Amino acid sequence: MMAEAKTAEGEKKLSAPEYFMRGAKKGFYIGVELIAPAMVMAYALIAFLQLAGVMPLIGAALGPVMGIFGLPGEASVVLLAAFFAKAAGAAAAASLYAAGTITAAQATILFPACITMGTLIGHFARVVLVCKVRALYYPVLLVTPLIDAVVVMLMMRFVLMAMGIA
Image 1 (cartoon, one colour):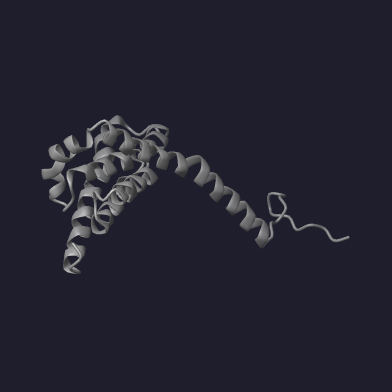
Image 2 (tube, helix red, strand yellow; image 1 turned 120 degrees about the horizontal axis):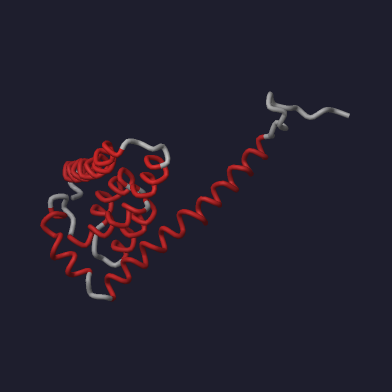
């Protein structure tokens, strides 16, 4: 009888299919436990704002600011959703695109911002607060991803304009 291979810690060495299955289980967990609820939240947020008649008010109020990026004011809801979860921001952009509120080029401008500033609240709580970072650095840690989002939206708009898309 052949002995099983063991690692230095005494654990059984996994085969390639076992690693694959372990990764697939983790991926499924991430999708079901983290991404899907964020997407549902984004769809619910937009549906609520539209049904309540608030979306046109948001569009009018934030239109001038979002216009800098070539976006309608309603696109600010995408950034708000992304503030809480990247997937929520992406889902909000998809919802606005499906409703005809934003174009594909405008969704393309929004996507990098969802990634750079996405899940800011969650990451701040899980990393900064848990690691007990000095409160003196909180403003910098909160504002930096927001500045990154502004820069990346401007860059994406410029790239799309150079390509003749936006």
